[in-house]
Amino acid sequence: MLKVYHAPNTRSIRVLWLLEELGVPYDKETVEFNPAYLQSPKHLAIHPLGKVPAIDDEGLILNESGAIVQYILAKHAGSHLEPKLGTPAYGKYLQWLHFAEATVMPPIGQIVQHSFRKPKEERIPAVVDDAKATLAKLFKLLDHELEGRDYICGETFTAADIMLGYDLNLCKLIQVSFDEYPNLSAYFERLSARPAFKRATVK
Ligand SMILES: N[C@@H](CCC(=O)N[C@@H](CS)C(=O)NCC(=O)O)C(=O)O
Image (cartoon, rainbow, N blue to C red; front, top):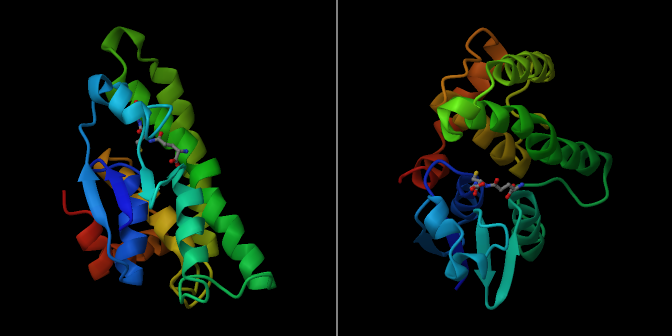
C-alpha cells in the first residue's frame, strides 16, 4: 500500500488531502519533525534532503509535493480533480498547481525561517517585511482571480486548490492574515470546510 511520510502542519498535508479526496487507501507514517530525526540515515534514505513529504509506492520513493500530487493523479487518470490532459483548461490548472509551490511558498518559507525556525540572533526582520510585501501582491492577484468563482480554475475543485489551500492554511497557522481579501478568505473557508481537508489536517 502507498506509504506517506508525514509531519503535522507540513506540505505532506497536500498528499494526504489528495488521497482523501480520491478515496485512495494509504499508510501514514508520522515522522518526528526535528533536525535529529530528519537528518538521520533512516529518514535520509527516504528523502535525501531530510524533508517531508515523501512517499513509498511499492518501492518507488518520491519527494516534492507537487510531483507527488501529479504522480498520484496520473495513476488515477480521468480523476475528477484535474481537467482533461492537454486542454487549455489543463494548462491553466498546471499553472496554478505550480504557482502554489514555486511562487507563493518562498515568501511564506522566509517568514517561517526568520520568525520561528532560525535561532533568534540569526533572524532578519527586513526579510520578514519583504516577504510580507511580496505575499500582499500575491494575495491581491489571487483575490482578483477568484472574483466570481469558487475555485482557482473555475467552478470545479481541482488539485491546484489542494496545493494552494495548503499555503493558505500555513498562513493561518503563522498568523499572516489575508482577511482583507474577501474572495481569498471565502475561498479558504470553502476549502477548509471540505471533509477531506479536515481528515488530512488531523495531527
Ligand atoms: N519543495 C519541497 C519542499 C519540502 C520542504 O521544504 N518541506 C519542509 C516541510 S513543509 C521540511 O521538511 N522542512 C524541514 C527542513 O527543512 O529541515 C516540496 O514541495 O516537497
